[in-house]
Amino acid sequence: MKPGLTIRQSPLGAAAGIGQTARMSPSPTRHPPSRVLLLHGIWNTRSWLLPLAWRLRVLGFQVDIFGYPSVSGGPDVAVPKLLERLRGSGPVSLVGHSLGGLVALEALRQCPELEVPRVVCLGSPLCGSETARSLADHGWSAALGRSGNLLLEGLPEWHGSAQVGLIAGSVAHGLGALMGALHGDSDGTVALSETCLDGLTDHCIVPASHSGLVLSHDVAVLTATFLRQGRFPAEAVRRDMAS
Image (cartoon, rainbow, N blue to C red; front, side, top):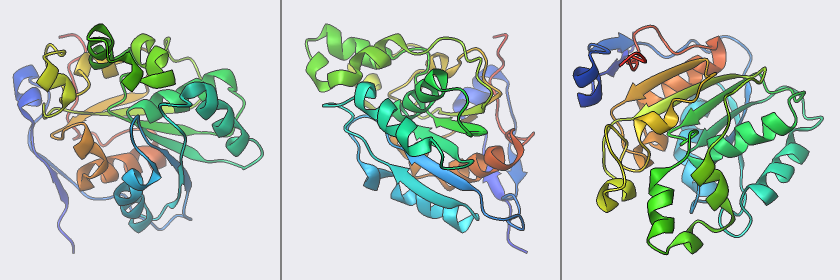
């Protein structure tokens, strides 16, 4: 028998009293493979998601990667292109890293009848990004390109039919931490509070940086569990939303 996956309590979890060391095994793969489409974040390309795609394939999913010009095109290009990809394609779940999560939810907000049962967002600043705001305030808004508005404003409360789970990181290594743009717990680029959009089905926290979320085996297993069950495992570390 293979050993279960160990999720160790992060400093964030210890501070908020939201979890203990837990063990969980990857979800079984006896069901037919499910189709999943991955979306990358800003300044990235499809290749950035290859490690996550490989891990999800090992866990039994049929995985494709959706690429889009995050700076020169932004959501004005990405959302219509994604809608075209999804229309008539049959049921498929979405996994978006950072900006990719916002693009995924914005597409479903515009076209709620699409056959997308579940969405997993990895470190997505669904409530708006202070790192993006700091870049803009320092005169570097061009680096955000046409994705700037979506990153600055975030999304409204989620009311769509798709179940949405979010995995947030708690290792503060990233651009936002270097710039001093973030206050409180974060993954170094996105603050924990920026990931807590009203209407989410589930939310959990892992000891990973923003970039590390797409490289983590733990994150892949949590993602697979949500895609199959519509919830993260009971033993996953969660934020005390009352705190």
